[in-house]
Image (tube, rainbow, N blue to C red; front, side, top):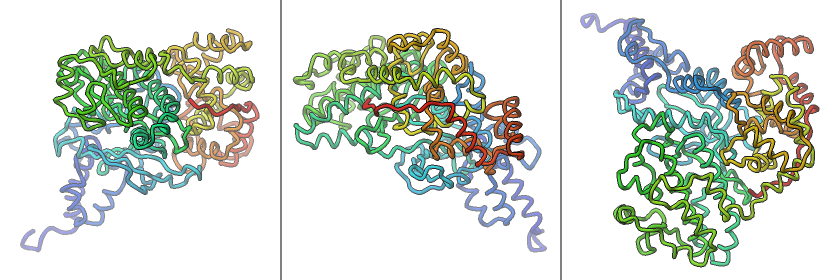
Length: 605
């Protein structure tokens, strides 16, 4: 071959294609870096190879050699597919999880993110990747056409050609946590994509408001009289964060990096709610953190057991989040009283904010120094008592977030119960609840999608009612909590009707109703008549992106039997084998006529 001037073109293409098939298959499963050595050379390869490397989806996961090699030894399962099997293999998945997994099977596992979104700007960068602002290519909402995308690069997860199982497990933990979490004060996860070269992409709602850290920093530069007026707002935000942490602890999940930087406001409006973000260090009790190691996170918010190299059996991992809440609470008080972000364990001259020394905190924790009560100055006893519940050296003696929520300081100015009583007595929610069991599986799936895409302002009264009935502060409602809530509101709603309603909404059979299930059953007709809601639901159901809903699209959401019945009903009405958007809009209007409009004053908590 050398004598004749090198191998022929067809042989060069064949050899490069063989290498591309093997490397791409390994990259799709284990994140081997194709944008390094191999990516630099693929530009010089044959055009057929360049075309091959740009083809998304299963093409990457198929070896062209047919042999075993590294691909056969290591396997071909994408990262997200293993998480899907774990979630589906558990007791059950509520409707929100089903919606995301259905989108993954058709979109995220087969097509690149660039088919649906277009990157516009980079918002911030961390060790594992970046958070970017992406625009929906065909937005159904002209007011909110953007999403936030967290991109994790493979080279940060895997070290060259070697698998880093610990780093891989962190990504799995974050993905699984985002999948199962359903809380009004936790960032809303929409879907995810995997690409063998570009990495893994988590698509979430975009928060346009400032972080709580930005609010506290700005407050410190204000005059004392102006700082005092911000206490009700800070109290409301801290209550929402604590409620989110209580929900996490009820699921056995520890956030691992709780701090004001990881709390964003949904919008720039002063009454906007808080959203907890960044679950990159989350640990799932009993499954993914067997050694109980807590030596990670932001130093200023890490608990004493992390500084003292304490090893637990994992049962106190969630107590680290309670300690972080105590530090955040101290920052709130000292920002208002002193215009400084003081650490509860250190004197003012030992540093403030993030500028604290490791040795100072280590010494305070080793000697078990009590927190500095002088930081709170002339605060009421309720504030001191609240800090005493959280800033405890022994993790076993530290209060859980559910107990913290019952403290008088957090109960002040909380109008959730009053708003709940007013909403129930108005009657619209009760009418929607009493007729929910009559809806078809297709209509219930549509309501779930509408609830998932509704803005916080639209569902504010329902969010307040959900929190008022959640007396256990675990972010989910039991059958008994529903019964007790209706009794407290003074409305005439029979126990039998409560049981029917609960059985219809508790899809996963867990005995607890999630936030999305509550919204889907109570959401009013005004949301269904919104053009944004109609287009959002249609696009979510149209997983194949054909502009029409086919039998295969509906099967992923409502099953074969219900999908067949739905397609037959639409065919009898329109004579088409697929559901067009115009037909879907008519069906949405009919569904809206079966629901009652829910109105209520926008809450402040």
